[in-house]
Image 1: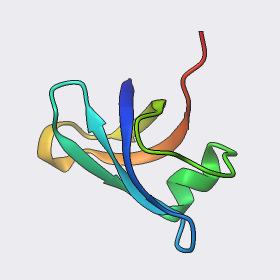
Image 2 (image 1 turned 90 degrees about the vertical axis):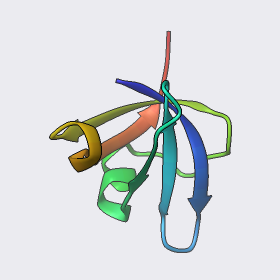
Image 3 (image 1 turned 90 degrees about the horizontal axis):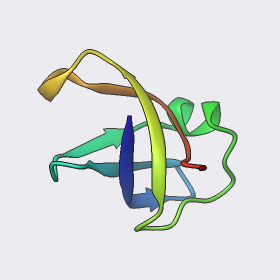
Image 4 (image 1 turned 180 degrees about the vertical axis):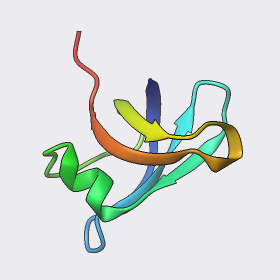
Amino acid sequence: MQATSYTYDPETRTGSVLLDDGTPVEFDAPAFDAGGLLLLRPGQRVRIEGESEGAALRITLVTLQTF
């Protein structure tokens, strides 16, 4: 699934993304670490993987979207 980076705190390695419908979803440090990223800037397109759907969506991986 794709999303857009919305917030990111480099000290805690947590943040949030916006799904394509505008829904914000938070991610925790383990999800950020799983993607192997060092930094994330607002507005970057990212690929996310998660568990569940809708309001129960829990992001398990955040990485950069590549073409």
